[in-house]
Length: 199
Image (tube, rainbow, N blue to C red; front, side, top):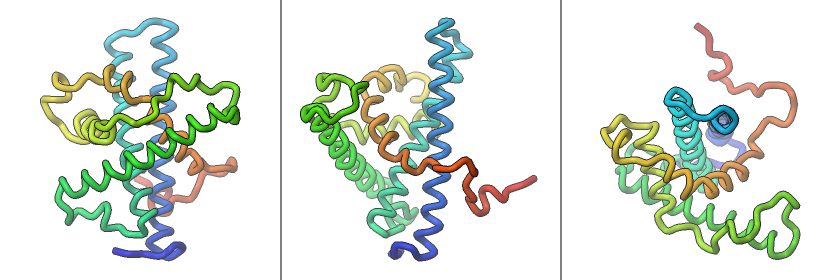
């Protein structure tokens, strides 16, 4: 369904995007907390389990946020429509994520080269010129296997430590880029039915 900026669909999508970003942020902060504990006290199976759950939730919510942002950018809910085949949705997601991540990576490298990056920024050697070709596909597959769907591949065919080492810098670029959805004042946002929920 097509929509226009500022109409009811757009407003509802913005509420959903804000909610998804908050879920992503909460999962990121939880993972960060567990990683700090592991660094200071050493890891153990229970801590690794909790860190894995937090990180996979972060990846899941970031991926879903990107899908929603793509729908908003195109002003078309069909991008997230269940009527599309899985392959069609995956291609749309992967193309958007690849292009968006490459733009962020290029901007980051340019800022470092121009001397306009913050002093705390990594050396340019940390950022390759190109996003790996398989990044968006692996991002989607990790999200599916680690958090979204139960599969035997979660425990044996997927190495989350390898995924983190290979791709976290790109996920972090995406996460920082969408952080402008963070509420700016001390008041928690009104998320309609989400914040009206009660038991």
